[in-house]
Length: 199
Ligand code: GAR
Image (cartoon, rainbow, N blue to C red; front, side):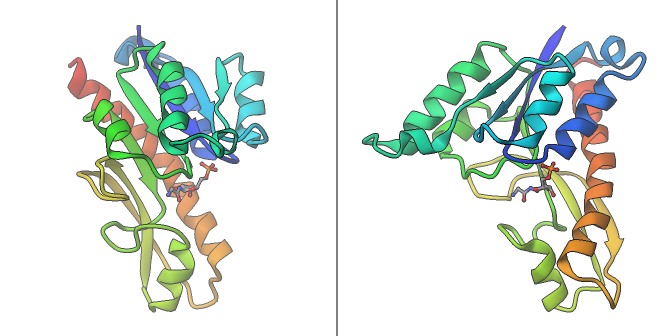
């Protein structure tokens, strides 16, 4: 059985969608993969509690505890790598993981790290995507699953979903509409990738 590691920072609804898809009948057999670790950079991430309740292996590497280190980002990532590499994962999935990763970390997982981003990339990389889409007058918004490369929110696009932006939308309403599509396309994109790994 191949291992998948999921990285979160908060609510973890995408992680939940991934876990739920991966525990559906036949999924493990068909893809010979399972989510073996949920790793968070925040101990208070709500998604962690849910993952523990499902009996999943969880870990916390708090980026703030490396603030005094000579190379805080490298030290934080080295600790994350230890946790992740213990599982020798075929995929590392960023699911609302809100830390920028160094090129060294990204290179280490080249070709096996995916991210979901709440915009139609290449539009609106970075933060506050929904507010920016509304302010720009976009008629459509959406979400993108992409392979992670050293450049933030770039990398080959694997899946996208489009939703309308309605005249009465605020960022919260638009985020909810986009999020429900994220829960659909991320598990699909992961299944597609696993099919390509072992057809
Ligand atoms: C999701 O909308 C995800 O696309 C976004 O954070 C939210 C996490 O929600 N990710 C990013 O903005 C990454 N730059 P979740 O914790 O409920 O999955």
